[in-house]
Image (tube, protein in one colour):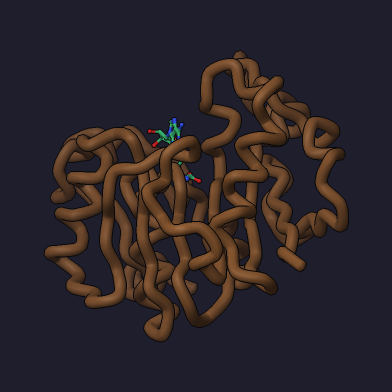
Length: 207
Ligand SMILES: C[S@@+](CC[C@H](N)C(=O)[O-])C[C@H]1O[C@@H](n2cnc3c(N)ncnc32)[C@H](O)[C@@H]1O
């Protein structure tokens, strides 16, 4: 697939998009102009996600996954949550450039999502739990809160960096407080083997 075809197929940050103006020049790699959320990981998350119902992307940052989810899943209602208003503003700017009636951004966190319990078909929380200060002793509580948002049969999709893999290619790396064994309290975890090995991407279905 050519770079032009990739650009036609995805909503992404480019040199015209708000705070990233100028910095895109420094990015490396064929998919970097799309965003630092690697295209391949985004495709994996999209494949795992439901097609209908309310899908909430918690810790959505600039909203790239949120927007592409809404675009590719027109029957779903997609909400991007983040505590950082500047990041949400970038998502909203992209939303004016790519109007999607099934997408919105609002302030929210894992701890206080502002989403009614048992109202969602999907919850996405990628590269976010590991960004919460002192998360480790509160991890089960945080994950239980995310599961509470799901309807029965809904899917929780999580990812954390696989720093042991990243470390082979890039150094130095910031320490990550979480590894897969920290999620051992979850039963029936499915790990997505298609995801680039820099990340652990996994999901649980609510019974
Ligand atoms: C590395 S970014 C993840 C972006 C995106 N989800 C991804 O997969 O690439 C982490 C995001 O988590 C947000 N964040 C930090 N603390 C949070 C919390 N307690 N609840 C929800 N999001 C949080 C940050 O503002 C930031 O946008």
